[in-house]
Image (tube, rainbow, N blue to C red; front, top):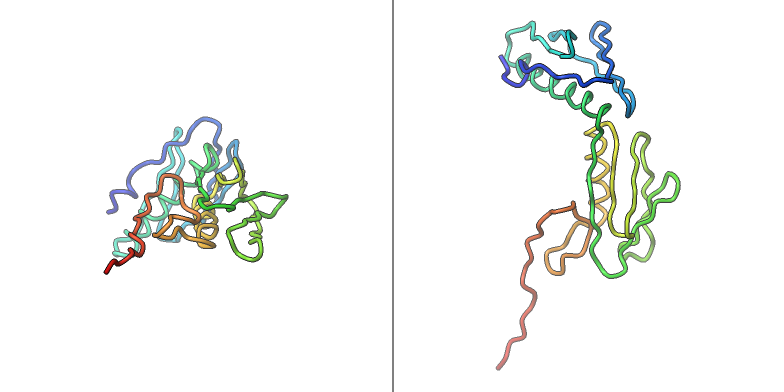
Length: 180
């Protein structure tokens, strides 16, 4: 049996859980989320805790047990507190601006990069170089942050580019002048 799958999920006050067959819906102050679990698992909600039970004994079922328990935990956390990723832009003249449903990035290319912000994601730009990505879906928040970082990943010589807040970049030594 999965150790992760056996752990009950604490449901904070203000979060409502509805279970209909294989579909688990979670609603909280930040929004709504739903997750469909496979037939080999059953979910139950009692006294402020959500638990997932495994019906099968196969190896695949044990793996799905831990996975779907974690996905349900992420849904509960997302509708209650939400998820966030912070990005930093380093480089001379590099900046970002959020305009409606688009994020415009000036990253040293001949043209600005326009990124359409997906539904369910909020991007806040501070000081033109700090991005805050927020949402209730952990996977979507991480995917958006990775896509924005992919436009100009940090390069090892000068450290320019888009990086996660607190990310350490291994710098390389540049060319050295060779004397005679």
